[in-house]
Image 1 (cartoon, protein in one colour):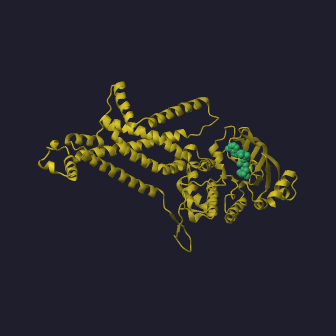
Image 2 (image 1 turned 90 degrees about the vertical axis):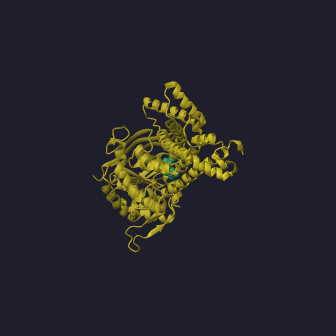
Length: 246
Length: 269
Ligand SMILES: Nc1ncnc2c1ncn2[C@@H]1O[C@H](COP(=O)(O)OP(=O)(O)OP(=O)(O)O)[C@@H](O)[C@H]1O
Ligand SMILES: [Mg+2]
């Protein structure tokens, strides 16, 4: 089932007041695919990701998850969200809970897992991101890179089918970017579906199956990294890449 | 001093200020203490119940408005919002002493029932504190970073689950100083309940002053007792706050070189 469509986004529009931030977005993510979204600041990348996770309600259009439109009210939102996790630029760890509890809470409340199972699952993923030693630490007591790795473990603990990343390394000090990208690189090889908004072009060209370039609320161009970075067809893509790869 | 009135004991005329204080406390100690007890009882229970009222209202008022909600739901929401706002404005905008009179004599006149004094006092302090705490709690909830809600929602938690497990624990911790402050204010402000004959410390002090005619000395005792109560409560609250800050260290687990080594980093929040 390697290329069954996992997410199909059709004619998606999002307006904030009169400001149309997403204009007729159309694209498909297949199971197990790693898609990187690049584009200038304000082009609507975060808004797109937030629409996919329903943190923003799209103004128009469809988001199909395994064939079912999640916007028509027929799919329980909590179930859908548990299957599509999100990692934020600002980490957003629960400040009142330690590292372990951050990864346990959602499992118990949303998936209704018994505590022992939730703890075991959390430990498995905390170990995977190299944070198993820090289970007792509170978010305020660990570094940015460590926070982001815990945030990834928290999302993974829900055992989702897909993870959305919104500029996961943009808030990090340069020396901590590597540890987070390494975790993400390892994840990409596990067959997890990933949708990554990033300014890390090297990461995108190395890890992505497909790169999507957005500008002013539309998808200008998409394709395999070698094409997008090597021989982009659109003028706007070329201009953008020239600016960021300089 | 009002010498002719001091017919209480033989040596009365020769007593110094502090001897009077000691004498009055020995003679009327049980009245002072029972007054202090009622003051503490009403202010503590009133603060707790007021906090509960404030929590409830703060939580209700911060339920997100959904544009896609049905119109009856929206109308209900509007009505509830207006009612809560009226409650908050009325009780924050009038003195508690006036509220006490209006509620006590109002219920007596309207329903023909006299609420027991103690219960009336407790109710007034609770309702009054509730109005203040409602705004404090709402502010506390709104001050929590939006990212906390989004992270919880993004893994499928409901608004209620997010409130209970993530937002309220943080908000309550932040408003604890304000809650303590409310408690201290209540210890002092229960004194106004003497107008409806609640036998709290001020009321009892007034009776002692009335029988002994030593107004200055009796109220001096009362002020010391108020001070002891507020000071003790303030200290205890500081202690609780410090406890709630959590440990400033954590243990690294299973590290081979230094098992159970302590990492010392100050929590920055
Ligand atoms: N809640 C909101 N209300 C109004 N306008 C918004 C809101 N969120 C985003 N916008 C606007 O939508 C546009 C796109 O924002 P978005 O955050 O999606 O861009 P982005 O591509 O993620 O940019 P960046 O690289 O800076 O993160 C911006 O012009 C922004 O001002
Ligand atoms: Mg963004």
